[in-house]
Length: 148
Image (cartoon, rainbow, N blue to C red; front, top):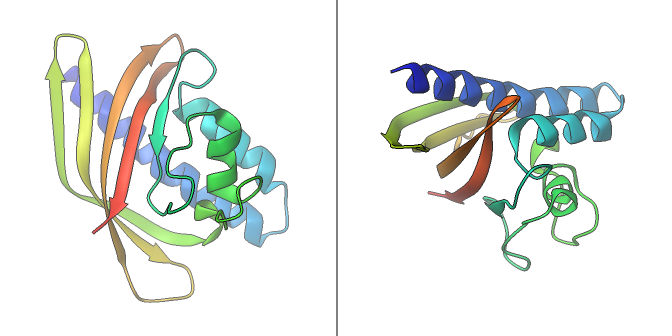
């Protein structure tokens, strides 16, 4: 049960981080720095290998490095990247959350419902996060998401 609280807190932090990057972008502030801090605090790239399959990829499917993840979230080195976090999103909620705790394995799977700032259409995305415990808390080791 303690791990469930950790996972819920982490997911709320992840959601708030994505929304915050978009807000910083809209305010014409340093959204690149905001995105770098988001990745460092939510993904384990700095300490170990990470597998990352973002939601909206077609040409370069996997983003298994910090730089490639940054490109996905804010645009950059990969042509198809337009900045997932720069949409921007007004609200992101989680539905059908499933949490698995076995031995040292922590996994969350569910549906993210993303509402953009300037539109009413909600995008639903299935996600799976596998977590690793670091000195600074939980971080994502495996991220797989796809549109529903």
